Structure formats: structure tokens, C-alpha cells
Image 1 (cartoon, rainbow, N blue to C red):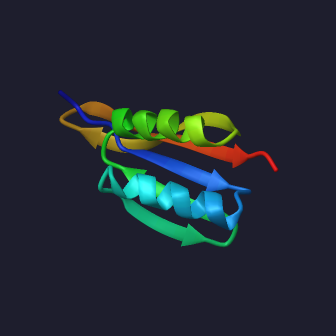
Image 2: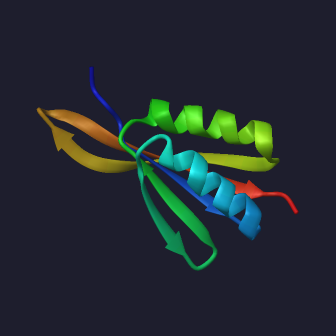
Length: 90
């Protein structure tokens, strides 16, 4: 079974929501980068990212945008990086 890497970008969130998101993301054993206007959370598989998003959705309201990026080839098959951008509502 092929795993697809994924990035969840959290933007426009207040400090409390960001800290809650980081604590929740650590349960999925991921890499977390803090940037100027939010955080980027890296998942090894998109299924884990979707579980994270659905859990976070129960706690906060946000808009979700989805996109993909070309991530190279592996064994002749195209690898895709999934990107979810979560924009929190004030």
C-alpha cells in the first residue's frame, strides 16, 4: 500500500487554537513548523491528516482548501503531495 505525504497548513488562528492544534498533531507523530502567520504540520500519510482535520473540526470552525503538488516519481509512479489549508474564522 502506497503512502501519500500531506501538509496541513493552519492559518489565521489565535494562540489557543494553535496550541490545541499542536497538541493534537503530536498524537499523530508529525513534524511541525511554526511560520509567521500559522503552522505547517507534515504527515507521512494523507489518511492521518484527514483524521487530524476531522478531529480538529469538532473543536473549531474553519474553511478548508485542498490542493496537490507534484512530489516526484517512485518506482515509475507519480507521487503527489496533498496540501490542506485550514483558515480559522474569528
